[in-house]
Image (cartoon, rainbow, N blue to C red; front, side, top):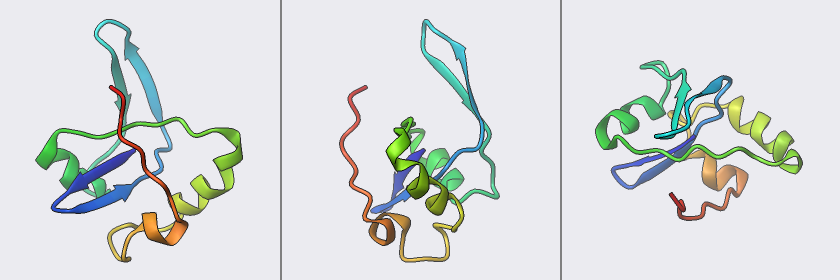
Length: 87
């Protein structure tokens, strides 16, 4: 999941998500105040949920094993290139 707030983008690896409904589209995931992205999600009510391809699996695990809160950010560290959402 990617969130953005106050000029800062954060990438968060989710360990669990589930399709809840097809029309309208609803996805359920677990996120709470222990996650750095929680504050941005509450403030903006927006996020992007992307399903990575297999070739990104190693990078996804590395991103998930560090905190975005205590570092300059995961995106520069892992050279993650973000694209605008299409939805």
